[in-house]
Length: 64
Image (cartoon, rainbow, N blue to C red; front, side, top):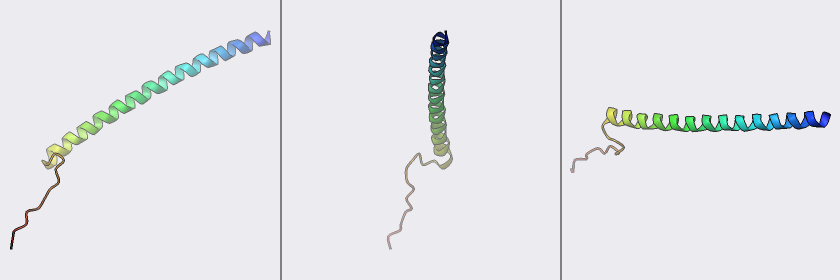
């Protein structure tokens, strides 16, 4: 009888572990998507505020 209970507990433990792995995977995917969106918005805001869009600013030197 104890063997049957142990087997059932193992099955439920395996199902719980599988569900937790799925939840963790979904959380990681959502984290990656949100991080990507934040990075794109940050690049857009940076481009709009400084006007350089990633180019390095070069100061003009006058030839003397």
